[in-house]
Image (tube, rainbow, N blue to C red; front, side, top):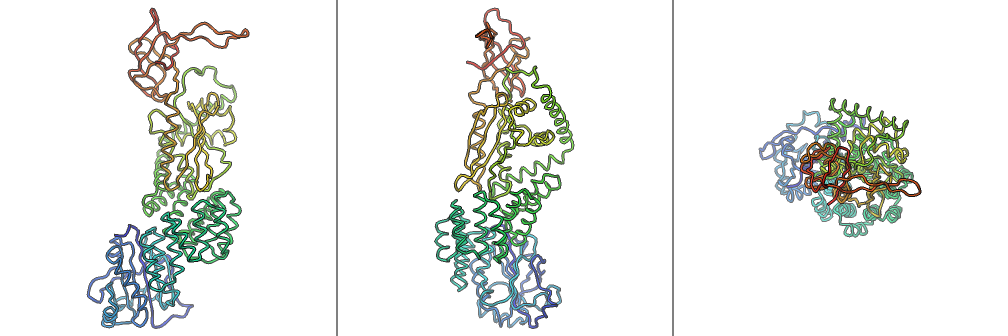
Length: 638
C-alpha cells in the first residue's frame, strides 16, 4: 500500500468544438474537483468522492476520445498494472464516444481501469470547462482541489509518467517516484527530465554519489550544484550552478549556498534573478520558500509569510514551506498568530510523518497557545513580573541587597537568555534555533535535580526591563538577574556553521562571580536534532549536579532527629546525603586584615527526607557538648 498522502490526477482530452479564447472558462489551479458520479462501461458505480474517501495515494481520472489519446491510455494502463489496487485508482471518461466504442477501445488496449461515458455528465457545469485538446488536471486530494493544469497532447505534454513521478517525488514517496521515472524512460518519454528527477530522488534519499552520477549523465548543472550543497561544499555548489545561469533551480541552490556562507545580500540578489525565469512548479516553490527564509533572516516576517504562501500555491506538498510558515507565525507571538502557527504546523505534521523539528515545534506552540489562553496563569505571570521588576530596579538603585545569604548554594536553577546573535546561522527550517533551545530547556527541566526559569515569565521580564543582548552581557546585570530569579547560572546558546553541519554551543555564567562556569558544544543533525538536545542536556545536568559542593544553613534545630536545612531537591539534595556541621573558628589575618575564618566540622547531618526547598536530617557524630543552632553553616562532606 502506498503511503498516506492523496493525489487526484485528472487527465482530460478532447471536445469536438473549442470555445473562443475570450469565452473559455477552463479549469485552473485551486478549482474544486469535478464531482464525477456515474456508471462505468461494465455497469459498476463510479463516484470520485467515494474513491477519495478510501484514501488512495493517487487517483487518476482520464478524459478522452477513442480517436486521440491511445498513447496516454496505454501509459496509464502500465501504471495501473503496477500500482492499481495498491494505492492507485484510475477513472477514464470518454467525451464523444458511446458505450460500445469505449468497450472496444478498452478491449483492444487491454485497459482494466474504470471507463465511463460522458452521457450522464454533459449537463454538469464543470463539464463545460473542458475546452482544450487534451487537458490534464492534477488534483490535490486533501482539500479536493485542482493542483496542476496541463493543456495539450503533443510530445512534450504527453510525458505523463514523468509528471506522475515528479508528483510522487513532491510527496516524498521516493521509491515509487524512482520506479516511475525508470518507466518513463522505458516508455520513450524525455530521458533527461526523468534522469534528472531520479537524481533529485536519490538526493532526498541521501544517496549523493549515485545522484551525482545521474546528474552528470543528464548534464544537470542544478543537480550537480544540489549534490555539492548537500555535501557541504558551498563554493563548489555556487560554481556548479554558474554553469547554467538560465536554470532558475540552479540559481535557487546557489542562493542557498550563499546563505550557508552567511552572505544574505548575495542570496537575495541571486533569487531576484531566478524569479525572472520559468521552472517546474516544485522547483519554483522551493525558490519562493528560500525567498521567505531570506526575508525572515532579515526580520521581515510579513514578507516571509507572503513568500511561503506563494511557495505553497505552487506545491502544496512543500512541507518545508509549511513548517517555515508556522515558524513565522510563531515568531510574531500574538495569540492569533499562535493559533495560525498551530493550524499550519498540524497540517505540515500530517503530511511529513516522522519529522522531529515539526513535532517539537508543534508541541511547543501548543503549549504556548494553552498558556496564552490560561487567564489565571497570565495574571500570575503579570504579578511575578511586577514583583521581579521592582526588585531588579531596586537593586540597580541601592546596590546588591546586603542581607542576601552569600554562603548557601544557589538552587540548581538555569535561566536561558538570548545571545547576541552576532553570527546568525542559516537553518534549512526557520525557527530551528528556537526549537532547539526550547527543547533543551524542557529536557533539562524533566530532571528533578534541575530547574529552568519559566520561559514566558523570563521573556516578559526582559521586555519589561528593556534588557537586550548588549545589556545582558554586563556583569552587574547578570548578578542582579541571578538574584531576582534565584538562578545560579545564566545559559547562553549560540549556533555556528561547522563544515556541512551546524554546531550548537552553550555557555554557563555563574551569577555570583559572573565567570564562565561551563562551556560545551554538540553537532546538530537538522533531520534528527533530538540527539543533539539529549547529549547537551546530559552534559549540562552532569555539570550542575554531580560533584558540586553544596553549602547551606540550619533552619530549625529544635529536634536533633529532625533538623531542617535550607537546601532541597532544587539544590540537588538527595536522601542519604551527608553534610558537615561547621563551627566558626579563629580568624585568619594577614597584613592586618581578616581574610577568612577557620571552620571546624563538629557534627554530621544525614538527610532522611527531601522537599523542594528544604530537607529533614538527623544529627550524627556530634562533638561532645555540641548544641546546634539555627543559622549554623553546613556543607557536603563524607
